[in-house]
Length: 370
Ligand code: IPM
Ligand code: MG
Image (cartoon, rainbow, N blue to C red; front, side, top):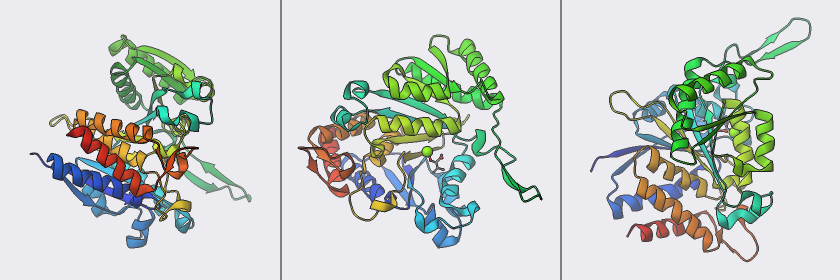
């Protein structure tokens, strides 16, 4: 059995509690299914800052580069609000994305039937929702230079961020969106602000040209990103795959996540380009939710997004498609059985803590695998 190398970066807040449930799952898969996972651990975020004054150490960065995949929990918390900007907890995540060139961020927004009631929108608007946001993750205003605050010398300062995209960056993210659309409902909607931004004009041109050259079988539409945000809350089921830039993707994916009833449910994958020799791609998997410091350490956090992120890891890094399907089915089944963590609790359901939810999913998964 080939070894499958995983780096676990649990991070801060509820990250470690959620990661503990995935560790249980990995141990069970190794023991019962001979899955051959080998895990290493490292520090990222505030805990890394406390340990060595950096949001992620070079040594842990090296482990991430060497692993087949990295599982990431969450970073940040009020304890580190005042640390220098360069070493703030989020800098660890941004370095992982940039150094591993994880340009493609896949953020599914799926509404589990059992949770349609928990959405702030009407159940008929969100029931059966299944959209995939493809967010460009290594470019745009997040990383563009100059990025600084300058002193104008007249009592005024100027804050500058730079939105910049090159053709190849747009081509490769569009390619990921079209390829994935082919495995789904075959529809892509590209979102930008070409009415205001030059980078939006180029984005639109390059997506259109990439479509024409290689993917004309896929249905392509374009929307201004603000209108896209409006359509997401009006009638989200019109979308299949949405492709957009780093900043719009950050915001639109939070909107899409909330449609599904809880931010605590949604996973994400960040992928690099396949290696020309081995076909392997660097990858990091993380829940969309943050570190939730207000509930950390109480054993009440929802571990589903972290577990569902591991399902994406099985699918995209290890091609363990059947196992990923079974794990996602186990999550849905446990919800159908009425188990709920506090964030998704509703009348008549059974309230459980992080560990009980994790146990129930592992048990269901093993039963489905038998
Ligand atoms: C996300 C987060 C990050 C981002 C933060 C933590 C830097 O909001 O992954 O969506 O803005 O990309
Ligand atoms: Mg975000």
